[in-house]
Image (cartoon, rainbow over all chains, first blue to last red):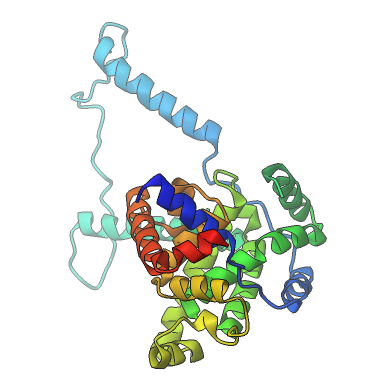
Length: 135
Length: 188
């Protein structure tokens, strides 16, 4: 649509009155609002400084891998040394069913993460119910 | 109301002065009500929705980060709340009185009770009433609220291009509907 037609449309629409709600609407809203607690300013889980720090560490580690030889500065981790045992501890779970250690650890860690997540989500959404949808 | 004053009002509310919310309601109540009316096509339901939206926005004011305009943030809440309300109503199988009447008459709900008004305004309302709800909302946000395409896209959760296309279609449709009468309108 060209500019002239658009201008015409603007002029025409300027004549249109917008629908107005009743006079009671403002009063009803303000009455309801006075009963509500003061809204709480929600803080992000990780602040701006936190994100910058994480980004900086990540960038430094990535650059470090490319440009520095860990062995040359004495930072090489002796992963193949027999003294360093990286295997998970063997625990006798005494479960009524037969499951591998890997499965049991997986269930345990999932439980821990699930618990943490619920706690974090509760904190986030109880302080600001609309955060996820509209922020 | 400029953006600076809006920010002052928001800060005052967050400090505990709930009365500072009144100017924000006054400023945006007709637009929020208009969005509800476009989607729900029922004055009473649109008014209930407007009340619900402003209360919801008040409760969430702490999460308003100021990255977008307050108006854009509010319209987004209003638009989604209106769609939700319409979905709930449709699920219940209830139709707005105006929708029923619209089907019978083949005319806009906004016209009801306004036959006594200026024929020019009546004709514009008829043309506006022919637009689908989303196009009508876009036209109102663009021409009445003077929001940019980007802001409309943010408010309605659409892409910039989608808004552009819908606005183009809406303008074309509106212009075509009004074309027959345009000489009279411009002359007046």
